[in-house]
Length: 280
Image (cartoon, rainbow, N blue to C red; front, side, top):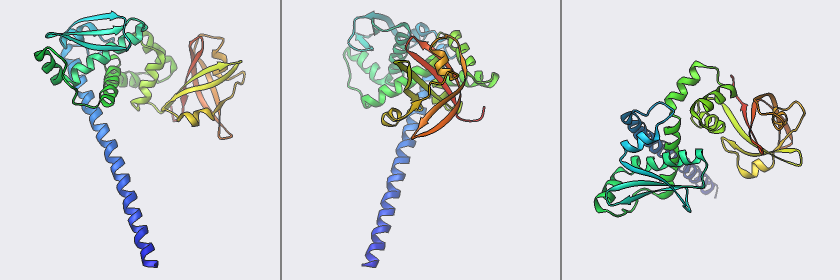
């Protein structure tokens, strides 16, 4: 019985280790897939002469063989349309200007990553079934659209030359006509700064957290409280349209945590903030 227990524990440990190895392998495969996709996107940006922002989407579209970009009524954000050998991008007319640009970039990435499928479809004059899972290709196209509109190498070099801050994020945003929260979150997602970004809403003069990047689980997020002290940059932002600097206090599982922060109101009902969680 004793020996059996030891064998069972040994089996459990080996099984657990295999699970860990499998999860790590999947993460590694995912990273490798993303890296290869971004390499292909960057190659086309360079070939089209559009590798420095602000990105000329018309020039990139022409380089990728797109005959026309049309703004039309759609039940989706955008789609590629084939008419014989012609390629057209259709964009939902209800989208705002920024969403249109990101959607165009997203559809252009489809042409980059599904080059063979599109070539076969153009030759056949009809659609050809995708070889990549829908969820995966859509995720890769979103990442590729981010790379098109704000290339990693350009952004990393910009951060090296200036002290990273909300002020720099606003400067880049204004220069490239990109949303402030997109620029800051791209910095976070690329691991270029040890920041956490937050979006705050307000109800009955009480601020609350809407989302965060890196993402907090929704259940965890619902249990967080942001303190509305008069000196909090979040509180100040509701009445001002400029960068507010100070300390954001968040109650996490009953404990108060202070974060040096820069915040900015990005809409009448939304305050966006950078929490400095590492050395600056």
